[in-house]
Image (cartoon, rainbow, N blue to C red; front, side):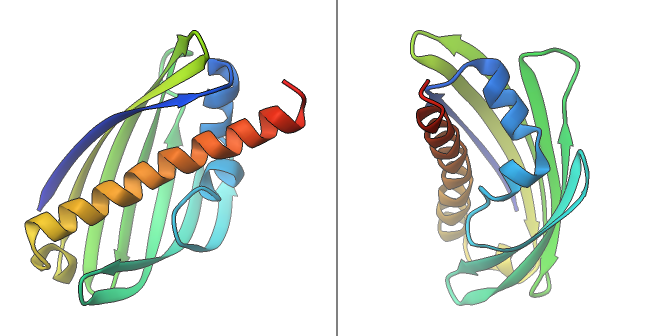
Length: 154
C-alpha cells in the first residue's frame, strides 16, 4: 500500500537552526513518536526502535534512518526503511525550510510504502494512523526547537 502526505509546520526559529536540528541524528531521532531505543551510527544515520499499533497489529518496529543534507541550504531529506511484526515500511521525505515572518515554515512531503500485516489492516485506518505519526514527528521537531529557543532567550 502506498501513502502520500504533505504539510507545513511553522517553527519560531530561523531556517538554519531548524535545518541543523533535522540533520542531527541525536536530536531528530528523539522526535520519533513512541521511541523506545535510539542508536546513532554516524552523523547521518541512526537506528530507532519504535512501538507501532494499527488496529489489531501491535509490536516493535526497527527503523533504519538516513538523513540527507541535499544540494542547497534550504532543504533536506529523510529516508527510512523499517521492519517488524512481519511487515515492512519504506518512507522518503523531502523538507524545505522557508523563512517566514515568525521564523521558519518547515514544508514537508512524505511518501510511504507499507507491506505485510500492517498493509492489510485497511486503507483508511492505516492511512489515518500513518498521517498521525508523521504529523506528530514534525510537531515534535517544532516543539523541541521552540523549547531550545526559549531556553536560550531567543
